[in-house]
Length: 381
Image (tube, rainbow, N blue to C red):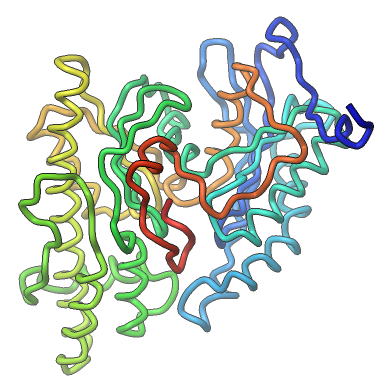
């Protein structure tokens, strides 16, 4: 093996030499949050978040009503070193104490993913410690473990700006897709609704805030795939219906509130109906064992959606598990957590691992039934 190739190898240790209670630095830069976190994993599998720093780019993107990939990548490059240093100082940790560096390697806006992954590679190489390339979706899938025990298996609803999926989570690295969006993600629909009505960026929280003043039955909106015998989603038609409803309105604050409330109710109805179908599929697979349901991703921070899913779990005898609200949106603690889980299993990556704009969490299902294309906040694969 040439010296050049040897230099690209991440340090690989046998399991006997792995640190039993690793200290992991996680880096997240897949979209418009620059984040770093230091996390310690204990022998019993519990974790302690020693720091979690997130730098928002809302001000940079607000004039455009959405995330601009080039601006996002530039902001990541400018902020990463400072954010990582803050995370280390908040954790009161020394770089030499780190066991490994984990970083999002996809899916996401490729410029941002590259920026974070390159920072992780540089640190790992300089410290001569393992590099762990994390799938951003796996970070979300494991995120409930940031708050406490969350045993496998469980049914996962991942709802964010770029992703809407239902997956059977059987173990680390063992995921089966039960349903996915065929066009836009739920978070995209929230952002588009906010943009159409001039509610500002970020769209999701602004739509939820406006909806509290409106009537959820004021506007008749579609529920895509209602009654269909599968667990897939579609939000493109709902997005278009909202735009038409607004164009036909008088654009008063009351009209905006009614449209937001009606839209949010429609999203809740779609999510709960499609999830009901996935619950039936999941129950046939796992039998009469514990029925656990996890919701994660930025849209999971919406209080009405959480309440609707909580009621759905009660009706179907599932226990609802969800990460704390602050860990629903993109963060580095979930990336550090995923890194820690891979570390204790000896799963490391070479320094030449590539950033990926698309990276299905369930590679087999994705190959057999490809997800839809590229959304405003990143690829939905």
